[in-house]
Amino acid sequence: MTLNGFGNGTVVDSHIPMDCIRRRKEQLKKEIQEIREKIAQCEIEMSMIQTHSND
Image (cartoon, rainbow, N blue to C red):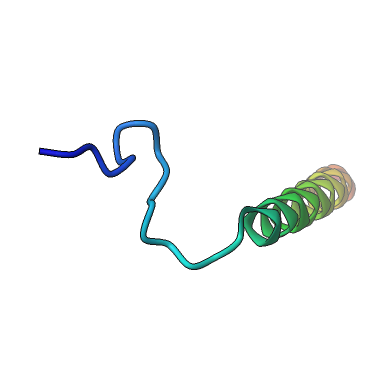
């Protein structure tokens, strides 16, 4: 029985080059960071709206 690389998280039969996967991973990390920043901005706006609506 041969180990096909599943134990360490790699798939030997995959035809996607590692550099493509790495680039996509970096792109997704950037997108996640941008979304987190947008969420933080929305939370600030929500708290400001709630503060003003309590007057």
